[in-house]
Amino acid sequence: MPAAIELNHYALDQLPDIRSALVDVYAEVYADQLEDPFFSVERFEERLNGHASRPGWEAVVGYADGQVIGYAYASPLPAESRWWAGMLEPLPEEDTAEDGARTLALFELMVRKPWRGTGNAQLIHEDLLSGRSEERVTLLVEPTHPRVKALYERWGYKHVGDQQPFPDAPVYATMLRHLR
Image 1 (cartoon, rainbow, N blue to C red):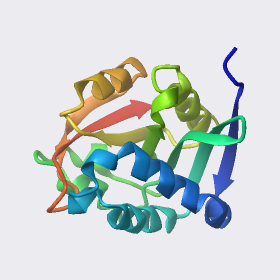
Image 2: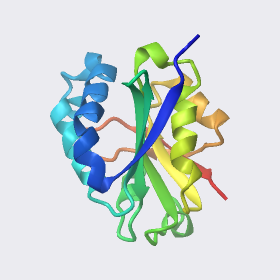
Image 3: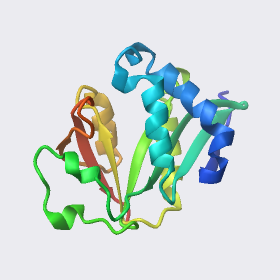
Image 4: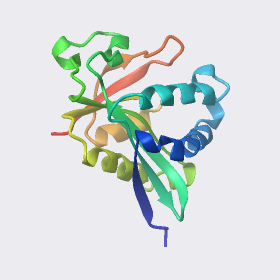
């Protein structure tokens, strides 16, 4: 019988307690891409620092027998967010106007290989979203991962366009799901 999964929520002040686990899982999941400067551990840590600097940052970490199996983290897009600035085809302003409480950006969702295909990614994802007050959630997914994109579509996300958030980043499919 598989081990029961325990899900723990962490706020920004608890990030030091889980930082090394987040980085270790990232390095494991992206092991074959770490040579690419954009996907390096150092760049991940820079992005993590930026994401965690936002009010409302939260993470959910899944554990099985005390071992981290995966996590997700997110924070609301601030009013001055540049999230939508990298869109290859701009969206209407009513779709991109942010007020700090409208849209939750899901920055990372990753599950270690032994626990993939078990429903744990969705379990972690839905647990993170369950207590949120935002009206919608957005995320980026590499179009080169069509199975991952299809998974998000099954979870209710819609593809709203493509963006390149940084000059050295790949082009990502931008997805959006309404929470209310």
